[in-house]
Length: 238
Image 1 (tube, rainbow, N blue to C red):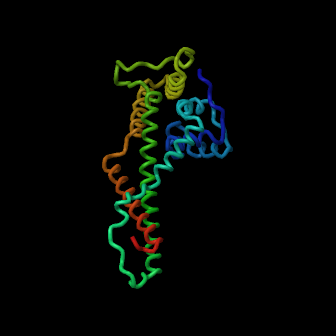
Image 2 (image 1 turned 90 degrees about the vertical axis):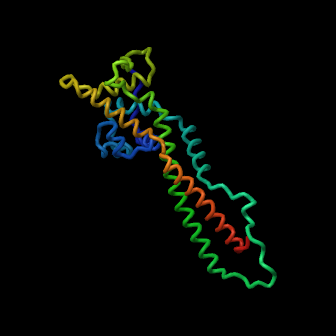
Image 3 (image 1 turned 60 degrees about the horizontal axis):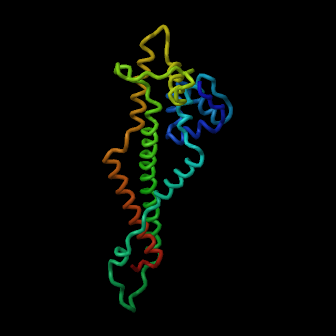
């Protein structure tokens, strides 16, 4: 068997964060209660050997901390709206000398409205972007997490969990799936495999075209609003 993870109040939270899982979702995957997962993350409980075995396939797919930090930094950089091209920053001629000054309070109010609306648009776009990143992580993890298809006689079986020549991920998955087997109910293991394959495929779904379009609209709206706010802060004169 591959090495089981040590119980920790932290690594379970890291797995949840990387794969975008809520407490109840990870609990469903592991077949335990949400309160247990919460207590483990707080350091109040430890995982049983059986749950450690079920968790190991995900743990083996968790990148090193440096990779996680780099991915988070890249996501933050991507979230920043791009500035408008210079060609769009002077759309109207300047006002002639002697023109009365603008209403500073009204311009400042509009500036703050623009900033607030931009922040909301960026927050909504960030949710979609995170959904896309998490789905891509699940898609990359599918080969190591998918059980054999019980309805496909040509589906390759998993190795024995104790076979030292087999890849660690395959052995970990085989050990985890063995927990779902019931010698008194031959239908339980195939039913669990069907459920798991469906659950994993749902996790790996990319954003729909409608969501991608909405993401682009939100980013464009935020870019325009922030450009307007910057112009207003400079005096409202473009």
